[in-house]
Image (tube, rainbow, N blue to C red):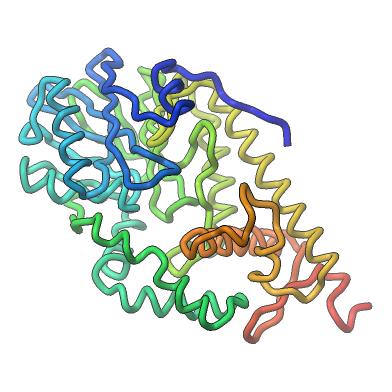
Length: 357
């Protein structure tokens, strides 16, 4: 795959990311602020919360994890912009993963702000954060179906449950639909539904300013996890491809992501992401030509990853197998793979399916 690193708009953020530091709060001009909120995750380190000045206060895009450190960083960042948490009028959540959604409830309690989500993510809140036993069991059933050994399936099914403590559930006051104008004075902010990383992932664009707040949908260096799991739509990788092509057609000057750093050349970054996933699809198809009838777990463990499969913790293994399954489902949709029923499901290139040779 050819290398493509889009040009950073913020040299300060780019240098901080390169040196594995947290960047400073930045005044981006025009009433827009970037506030880094630390995460207890070495790989990501922080989420970028964006504060948009309003005539009577401020709106924020995303919120951060619900930890004391994150809350202190958010309040300090708002203070640098001349606001307190009580001045927040709206919390626009790109998606309900803990690093984006976790503090929304606390912000609302302090300020009376409204919280907005896409309906597809709002529908997942109860099972994801309240009825976790159901989610754990659904995870286990899926993991066993794709070939995960029983003991590991039980471990992996609970792999992300520790993150529940970083979320105080905030049911939305407003559901934000695709194409909706948010009605924030001084801004022409519009919602763009971009399923893939999450079923209800939202980006926000302001066409007059040439800005795209991309959440986790498009990041400058890493690729978001596009994984099949019990709370996903039927074909998340195809959703992601469609969403990427959609935002690539927007008139955008600067991309403001939730992690890493601001960047330009959105079409170039989208093209690179699509190329990356097409190469992964080819690798999986090749693996099944060499090992027809393998299950998803077997294929996952033999793919090329950024570090050895044997070094993966339970959370990483679950994310990796879910991502592999998402790719296999797209290959199935394209007619390049078929699968058996039963447990575990087994996969073949169509011409290598037993009985067709």
